[in-house]
Length: 215
Image 1 (cartoon, rainbow, N blue to C red):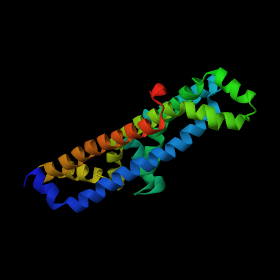
Image 2 (cartoon, rainbow, N blue to C red):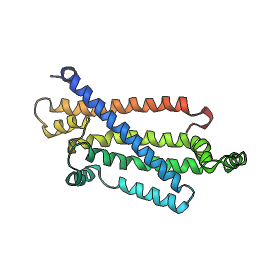
Image 3 (tube, rainbow, N blue to C red):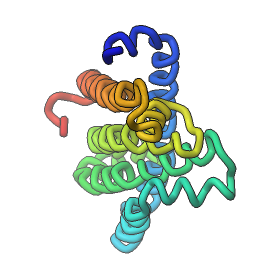
Image 4 (tube, helix red, strand yellow):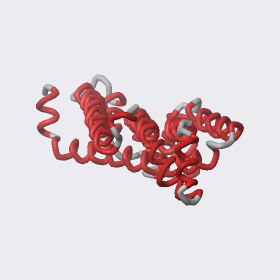
């Protein structure tokens, strides 16, 4: 059986796995964005705080994803939890860093003008600074999403959702019938989904970021 026949015969199951893979990555990216932006807002005015937040987020990336998931299994069990936690943690660095860079790059003259017309500190942050920092934040989310697409494959080790189960099954049963088809289907599927999501980010940027401030 060739690859195309394998995919055609299992299209329904593969489609569900692809949907679960994308869903897990997108949801974890959104969670990481909420956390990362809050962290960035809290520390961007402090050089020490910014450096510390970036360093801590960077430290997470030094832990191999396979090892981190394995360490979480005895604590939270198998399934969604040991998959979601690492994905959120790994997504934090580009989002935190870009939030800090974006907010720090806002022209003080713009914020002073906003304050001069009576805006509160919260109003300046939400209506001026975060809007101007949005291109950088979106770029951080885009990088995080692409990174998580690959890391989510490892989540299959903890019985997590997605195409990783195809890859793991193919590698585990190497040499058996359809083992190569399984590994290739999972791998190519992840690449295709990553390209689709990247295209969606391009569209989001096109409709939400003014042409003159795109990054």
